[in-house]
Amino acid sequence: MLMEQLEKEMRVCMLCPRACGVNRQAGELGLCGQSDEIRAARAALHMWEEPCISGSKGSGAVFFTGCGLQCVYCQNRSIAVQGRGSVISVERLAEIFLRLQEKGANNINLVTACQFVPQVITAIERARRSGLRLPIVYNSSGYESLHTIQMLEGYVDVYLPDLKYRDTEVSRRYSHAPDYFEKAASVITEMVRQTGEMCFTDEATGSLRLGIDAYQERSGQGEDLLMTKGVIVRHLLLPGCLEDAKEIVAWLLSSFGERIFISLMNQYTPMADSCAYPQLHTKVSEQDYQALVSHAISLGIENGFIQEGESARESFIPSFDGTGILERV
Image 1 (cartoon, rainbow, N blue to C red):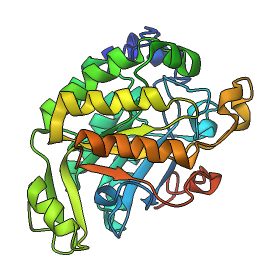
Image 2 (cartoon, rainbow, N blue to C red):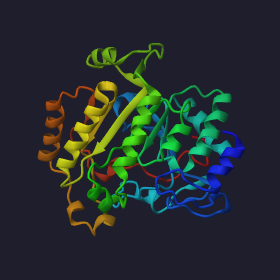
Image 3 (cartoon, rainbow, N blue to C red):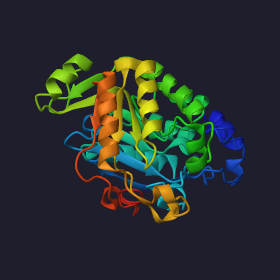
Image 4 (spheres, helix red, strand yellow):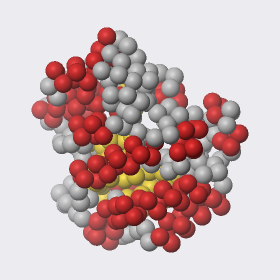
């Protein structure tokens, strides 16, 4: 990205719908808690994404500090809200991408990078000039400005957004964002436009580019196929929010059909910081999660992921100890 544009974005920050407009270049902090200095808390191979993202070798996940949404139940609260992470340069970030490629990562997975999108784009450009060839995955809350997602066209290959809420009262209560659905629906529509038809490659050979029909056939035979272009929309079922979740699934199907994957997640983990919200004190019941899955199947959804077993535990939250950030990955 041209330095002039980077500086402009940081002088009056409008990267997320909070539109706080602060001068991050002058050291002011946005509602995300960040200035224009890149902060990140972990860069390592990550095995806990959807199968077509992690594969057998892992996704090269870079966890960025800060978040403009700041949900009251955030599972990554130590970095999203409390600010854990180390300051790194654009040059160091580009080097991290290349090191993850050397480690055998299937892709570069940008986790909650909205607040640093201009710097990330610059790092991608630098890394590509130095030999980065992996697909770029943009892993986000879904709460970004349309302008931010438009800036990413040509840089991101796979979008991995959340669609957290349909109900404005629920989004107001848990994320202080009554406009969440309006904003997320807009950016997800843009993500689908940018990526077009989903494409996959065989992890073992890396030489095949397959469409969705081939993916469905070959993944059913146990082969590891990786998404190289497309959109996976995640929804984390929250306690007491089954009806809202059903509306989200129905909206995704009616809006995008089989052009996207839908990932239904049951890994909500009660956190101490959500104590002011009694409904969030318990895990999602197996009965509610199965009701959501059954609803998705009844609507005819075929391109989807579900979680099985005991995934709602804190051990699934990575250790944000600075791995891979300041030293060689």
